[in-house]
Image (cartoon, rainbow, N blue to C red; front, top):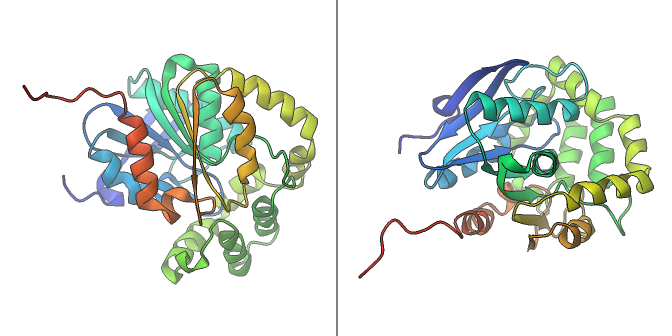
Length: 291
């Protein structure tokens, strides 16, 4: 396999709503990876380091949502634009039912895709992003820090938010922080992020009754085999968020990474890849059998 750099795997596809940027590598059955939200995020920022491992088994596709990365900007709330964009993307690449791995916002969108279009999702893997805080406070610490960054986008506030995303802040090297700061401080990126995280979104998270009703309807509609993964020390979607989906999604499993925050695919990279690959490959028949 050739070197899987950002530029070598970069692709763009035209859709009715605008161009969608993605990364592609590998051969075989397709696998779709959906990134989270936050300052400086993109598909590559979330999953670029995992691409070689998944590409060894799948035609791996890492999509940039509208308003993120190099995809078309979102005129309204990027969360509302994400699900239609995923369907446009699957149609543009002539893909029917695919396994989907989603982190945070990407996990939420993947769950909505599985609930509303079960014909398009063969397996679902989430990294946080789903469920309801049954015991922890809402909004959570990580989201509050994110809104603070949106209101006053300084490097110091970016670092404070990034520290809330991980168990071990040693992961936040100067290079890592600089990469996120460079992308996050762009005017267009700040505008899109502000439409997603603001005082209104914080108020919506406090509406526990409405959120509970919506969550039950969503989760019980997911028919695809589902693997929930959570960091035990997640401060964006704390571990108690897993209890409701674990009970309500019919074919659901849960894996918890110890000493891990919200970015399991980064902070516990090798374990994450092992767990997710094992789940995705579970039902694949071997290409040959011994006599």
